[in-house]
Image 1 (cartoon, helix red, strand yellow):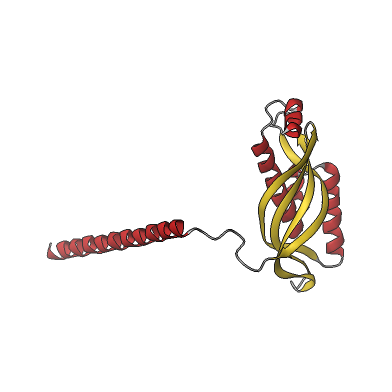
Image 2 (tube, rainbow, N blue to C red):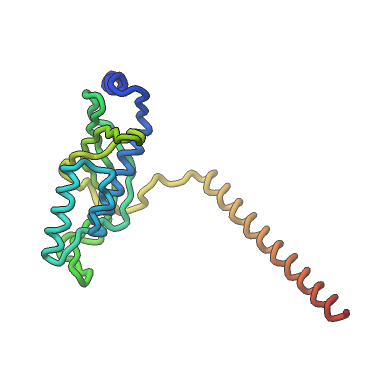
Length: 198
């Protein structure tokens, strides 16, 4: 808590949930930029030096006719590791995806389409653009570490009461839909009958 207070003193109006949301959003754009081989997509969300690295990575892959893809990419959480400098935070992103390098025919050159749980540390800094709201951007990336294979559901099993409530809600929607269409058909038949009689 003391570390976050230090950051808060150095940045009036510091909001930890907003910071975590900004980092999450920036990381999603960063991964999409590499996977789609369109680095410009992440430009507003990363620092200048990191953007050059992303461009270099995409160019290097393209020179070999490859691209790196994180399939079924999903972020599960972002943890603050260190926040001892105002406006600067070290965080760890927890995610899952497949990790593969593909050729122009979308064949795997390296990696696989198997889902993996992994984590990556990122350095985030506050950027205060002129005339725009300050936001957190990613300025550095640490090594990606694969934690495990995904062999089951990615989320905690739903408790029985919640599952039954959702099932009951779904059945009610289906009944309401059936009743609506039955009523609509009856109105249509009555209308056609009345029209034919006229």
